[in-house]
Image 1: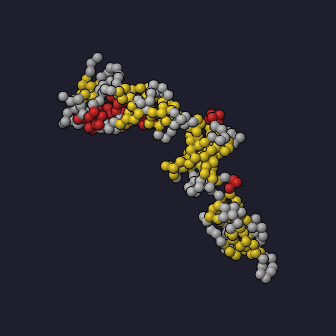
Image 2: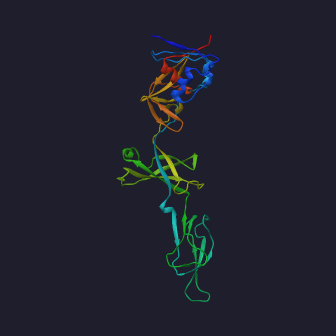
Image 3: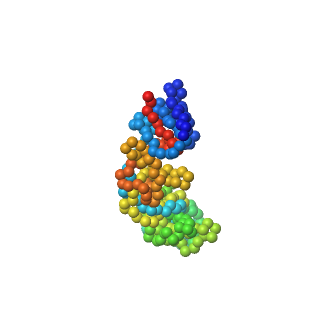
Length: 321
C-alpha cells in the first residue's frame, strides 16, 4: 500500500485535512493545520490517535455511558382544545334590551356572578328585568352583546370556559394504535412555551378511524393552572409507552449514523475506537444503547465528526517534528 503524507506548513494554514472535513461535514478547525500532520492512506480503517493538543484543537468533549431512567416514548402532534364539560354558552330567556353589562371579554368570573341585566319588553313601572349570572367559573372568551342591544330568547350573550384543565387533541397513526391505551402518561410541550413540559394522561381514544389520514384522534388531558395553554395552540406530546428506570444511555450528540449504521467513538487509553451500537429508547437529551457498550465507557460527544473523517481516511494525526 502506498501512503501519501501531507504535512501542514505555517505558510499554508489550510491543508487537505481541513478541506476533507469541510467537504464531508461543512465545518473546519483551522487549529488542526498547526497541530500536526495527517497520513492519508487508502488502507484499512482503524482507531484514531490524537495527542492532547490535537484534541483541544477540535474542542473534543466526552461523556460517560451510564444507567439512567429513560422511557420508551411515542411522539405525536396535536393542538390544545377546551374540554366540552368545562365550557358554557350564556343566553337569555326573555325578549328585551340590555341595560347593564358587568363583565367584558377576558374577565375571570366565578359561578353565580352577575354578567348583564336585561330589561323585559313587558309593561310595568318599572318594567321587569332579569340579571344574567354565570353558570360556572371561568374566563369570558366570547362576548357578543353590547349595551342597549335588543335581545330575544336564546340570544347568545357570552361564552365561558374553565381552562384549569384542557386536552391535547392528537392524531395517532393506525400502525401505532396497538401501542397506546387509555391511562398512559404523556409529556406535552407547546410551541408557545418550548422549554416548559406539561404532564397529562390519555383519557380518550376515539373509536373511529379517519379513512383519509389513517389516524385516530387521542385526547390527552393536561392540568393548566396558570392558563398558559390556550385553544388552538400547536403542541407535541410524548406518550410514555414503557418505563425503564435503568437504561444504559449516552448523550444523543454522541450517536452518529452513516450508511444505515449507528455508531459512537469510544475513548481508549491511547486511541478512539469506532463502535457500532444498537439504539433503544430516546428522549430530548439521551439515547439508550442496547449493545456493545457497558457502564463507564467514555464516548465522544463533540469532535466525533472530525474523528469520523479521520477514520474514513484510514489515517491519524501525528505530532510535528
